Image (cartoon, rainbow, N blue to C red):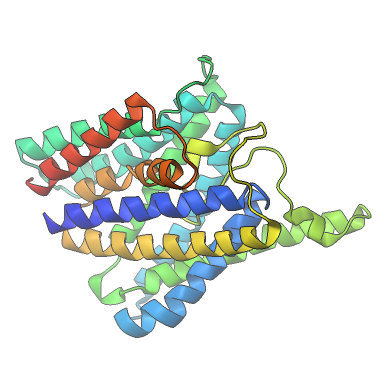
Length: 320
């Protein structure tokens, strides 16, 4: 029961991080937001979490941390690619569902986890909730291309791989795998930003020109999540932060995402991967709730239904 409650709380924190990342990405390039978030999360883990939680630097756990960092980078690349192709109303829920199903199948078929009938029913309800919460109403219905579907599935698998990999770490490792994960993410994203800056300078532009948002305004976190609810190619009437505020929002995104990772690691060490992964996939709920409160955005009826089912699924999985 405690693991389910913790996992659901972690999902809400993930969604809050994506909300801040989405706002920051209205002024800053998505990869810049991701790099700042990764670096901020790393600092938070090193200076705040590690002195309190601690952890042993076990070679196997360090390797799992490195692998989780690469899965996150792959997830971000595939996620941006599929969202650029669209339609988001289909591909974003598909990504979320796959990110839930992959760890569930791994847990049940590979790790041999078992669930009671109410747990199985809770997983089914959770998957329906993920689809409804992640649905973006109002988009023109377009049949997705095979390439878009494959990219969305790949993004979901990469996101789910993060949970599978982190679940393989030992209890003794504490926050060490997360520190390694953030180190890898910071290295990769900073290198990409550096290359973009070098290309800009060679083209006769200022290096800082690569910081400005271009194209789709997407926010993402180092684990591969993104602000799927508010991704768009066109200007929007809602709040658009100043450039200075955008840097702080990106840092806040990283702090919340690192906190969510800590919560999810705690949930994984309390309970089963299948239950935790299904509930973690409901992270868009935190995003749309904050959008409703802060930006006064309307929550569609289908998303309210998804939120209700998410709570029901959480209760069912808590009893599993």
